[in-house]
Length: 130
Length: 146
Image (cartoon, rainbow over all chains, first blue to last red; front, side, top):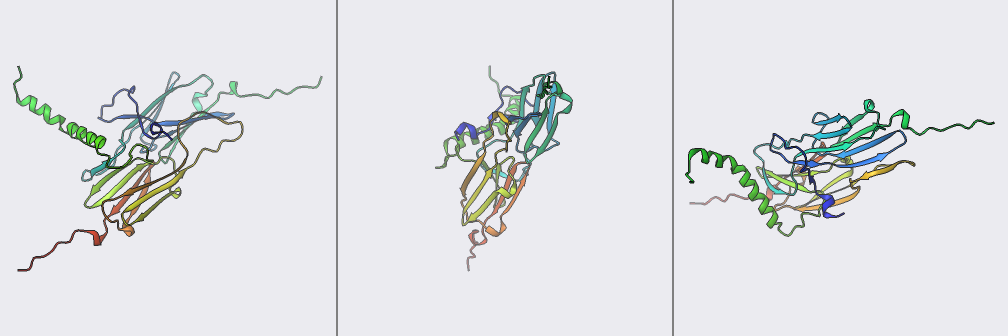
């Protein structure tokens, strides 16, 4: 594992937040099954209330708001990572059935199911005996 | 011409937290104190309050049962495994950025830890371990006899 892989990457392209926090790019896995495309994003510190998924035209944007949740009377004595919001956008192709997108958040991991539209699902064509 | 004014002072005061943060960042950059901070996983932040240290680490998507925390004297070890997705046949990755595998990290605290008082909490993918200082390690007040 290289150094770059382990550090959070700052999202410098994202629009700046009104709150003075940094924005990071969540690391994602995307895999494909016959029925759907799954997108899994590591977003530690978010839950179902603080994550937003928006689909505008064909741009899917995931954002997560992270509150530090640390009391005022705590002082930081050693720091290796920074806490901030998450934002990342993906362009979807037409093969996704937009109405059936399903999202869950568990243990700081966002899981998006992007079902394929009926028309692009592989079909088995039966061969009739002549 | 530069004339110090009240307005300027106020602006400066506003930037104080920012300057302090910059100073912290610089300190962090130059005083890694013998630790290789960049390659260790998970990255940690340590907070302190009333002699209790709170270690925080971002470990998204790991079952709390798969995280082990052990304390010996003044060293805390956090280890665990991040499971890979089980892909069935015919399923393939289009993109894989999350790294599965095991990790282990030992953190040496500047005091002896009261192992019994250690508490760990895992929520929203963030691990919190609070480490109280051992009673016998606390500074003792010595009374001066007249």
